[in-house]
Amino acid sequence: MAFNLTTLNYYNLEHILSIQQISKNYGRIVAVQDLSIEVGPGHVFGILGPNGSGKTTTLAIICGVISPDAGSYYWYGKAALAVIRKNIGSLIEVPNFYPYLDLLKNLTIIARIKGKPVEDIERVLKLTNLWDRRKSRFDTLSLGMKQRLALSAVLLGDPDVLVLDEPANGLDPEGIAEVREIIKQEAEKQKTIILASHILDEVEKVCTHVAVLKKGRSIAQGRVHELLAADDPVVVECVEAVRLKEELIRVGMSSSIEMDGDELTIILKSGYGARDVNEYAFQKGIILTHLETRKKSLESQFLELVKQAGQ
Amino acid sequence: MKSLILNEFTKIWSYGAFRIIILLHFILFFLVVLVTSQLDITIPGFSTDYLYQFPNIWEFFPWVASWFNLLLAILIIVITGNEYTFRTFRQHVIDGLSRTNLLTGKGFLIAAIAIYSMLMVLLFSLLFGFIFTRDLTVAVFVKKTYMLLVYFVQALAYMSAGFLLAILFRNTALAIVLFILYRLIIEPVVRLFFQPEVRLFFPMKVISNLTPMPEFLSISSGNQTDPGNVDTLNLREMGILVEDLPVYLNLLLALGYTSLFIFLAWLLLKKRNL
Image 1 (cartoon, rainbow over the protein chains, first blue to last red):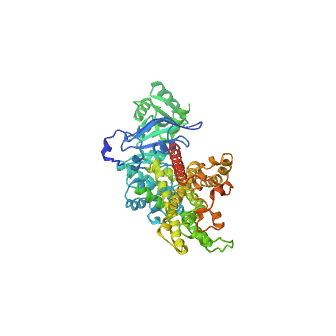
Image 2 (cartoon, rainbow over the protein chains, first blue to last red):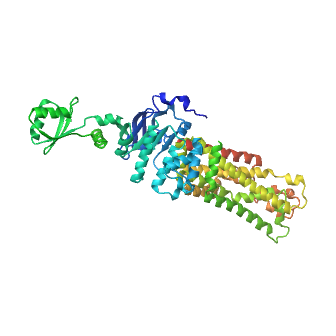
Image 3 (cartoon, chains in turn red, brown):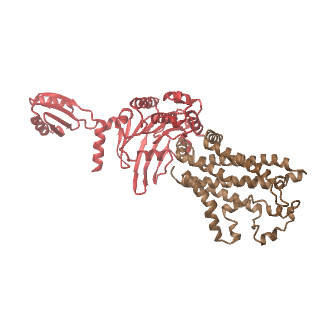
């Protein structure tokens, strides 16, 4: 029964989690379709997608509560066993606790299941500011507190892998910031974190890698900054916007230009930068009044991807 | 294994409904046997004292206790149904239990409640038995003590049936209603379509026949000193006493049904999403 993590040589593993071609249908509704994801050690992996895109189903499958119709998944390169999950902290959908038990008893039950020391409960409750409420029944907590308790349960026993499904659900802005801080701290400890969210900002701020899901399919995957780096638009303002647009098209520097009054939004071909635009415009005697490389937010990136996949 | 047992204990200890049902079970049983022992029935040759003497008490008390098995089965249904309502079965699997672990935990709970119930019968049997028995010998005392074990199996069987229904419907109310309907209406009606010999093999019949009603008839016929002498064969031919299976066969069948219930529950747990 003993499952020793150290024997698996955690840091030399290529993949902590490997999902291969997983599919799951609920009747005629496709929840997940041919999904493959690989998460390496130390990654903070965001699974991004609109409501109903299969995020929770995917996480429920890798946590053993739903069996996939097809495909397989491996934790630490091994076929899924219940004992492996004892070293994975997971929060799927809503917090599930016994409403009539106090926080200490609820966490004691989880500590026993996971085989973690009961003494660790104090640390995780203090981490989420719930230590003062330790003797309260679970059903007396507010929604945000329940969510924080669920996070305490996830962190119990200091697991090497965290699986979080919408961890900021139901939290106030302060709570969201706290959760984000906790995730960042865990990431700094070289933990592997798998985070599902429909809040792009959340993913953008904490994740190193991201997979975008739509209707159960993965429509984009990669490092967050690589996905972001692609095709950042250059925005310029000048009096002779029409002439500049024509010049840029003629010289073949841009792949697309949108004009809005005096403002041009230019997507450059690879190899060109804002500097080239400025230099070229100057050569042609056009004076720019404004020049800016606009970092595309994950949001617009995401909307674009979803739009493309829908075509 | 130890943590599974401790967790089941933690879950029930602070649970109000559990405390109330167990308390009701204990008090109701005590009240029934107490009140019955004080009854003064003026039928010639009939005295309830007879039922409270060793060894007859070993048959009488398990029979009385069997009326309250419904409470125990409902208790198991409620506790198992809670795991679905609170989605804690799901959470336990996420946290690292296997589905077999879920079953083992509840198996321990069922066994623990059956042991409690058996000890309760033992306690009151000793209490009333020593008060009412006049000529006590070891042979008289020991005779029919096996009924305690038979009662234990019966409690186990009822609770396993309740557990299976709770797993099947994943809904407390539905499981309780169907348990009661099946026990009191569905199976008795279905049994009527079969030969009398076949009827004895139906699960609820097998389980309830473990603790048959003590033979009151033999008592009221005035032969209290030696009820074994009553012509029970004749009574059976008259249709007053029903033909029963031998106790050991009944016991084996009940254990078989219990294993079947648990096995089916395990299959359901294994196959379905949580």
